[in-house]
Length: 201
Image (cartoon, rainbow, N blue to C red):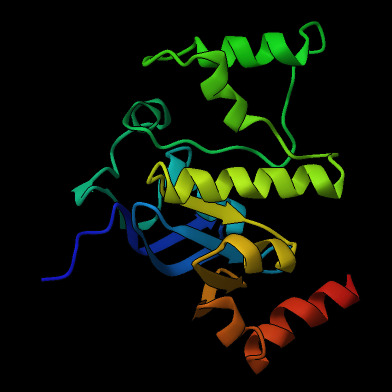
């Protein structure tokens, strides 16, 4: 019997403003695994994360955590289960230092984290390549040594090559390819959706 995925969704669909933005999205994520998601702007990546984290409710489909249906759980209830996400553009209060912001975040919910635990959540925006490489190593350590399931939306192919166990490619609200990055990167559908769109943009 196959092992139950740590985190998964089945047939997620979402409409926003009368427009279909996600269609029949299914994925599975296991403990100790890094799953990468790539795709052009407008592919539906952020909308998918909003559903998985509990901010949006899908039009149809289910989200599961440890095999249990969590569709009705709110964002904060999912956070208490250990489901967390970061944002592409962190919003930091101007009157607080970075350290004070990190301290407030780690003391907001139980279990309370130490400052050493919180260091793993430091944002990578604006870092030089050597610093980003260090973040990559931290992600690998979290997934493999601490058995954390990581879902990462990333535009840098070289990062996903180094840390992702599997990759999902999205375009126009659908998954168009999935598997190991080396196997799918030369797929005509992936090249048309991702690389040609990147050049056009």
